[in-house]
Amino acid sequence: MLGTCNAQTQSLASYTMGGWWHLLDGRYGSVMTGVQYTYVRKFAFHGVDDGGNVSRPTANGNTVFVTFRYYPFQN
Image 1 (cartoon, rainbow, N blue to C red):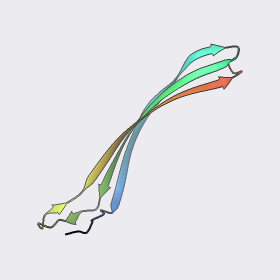
Image 2: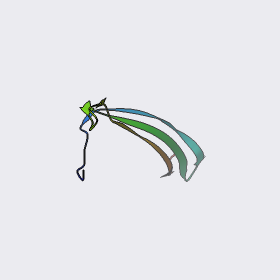
Image 3: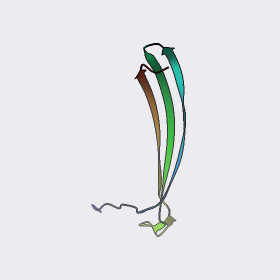
Image 4: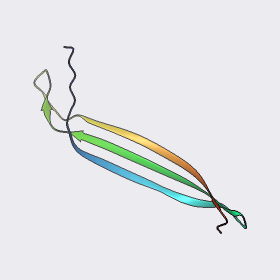
């Protein structure tokens, strides 16, 4: 009743996409920006819940990264 159940991970699936763009190119360097999106899904091993039903717990997560970079003296 007060216990916890931690499902053991069987596999992970991850999908990532993104890109980089030059915003400014000058004699004092370059400024770039990047965007990346990642989707991760976790699959646990099959198990039996308290009602006797077979289940396979899953969880997922979404992440977005935005990056700005300055490269001095590079064109």
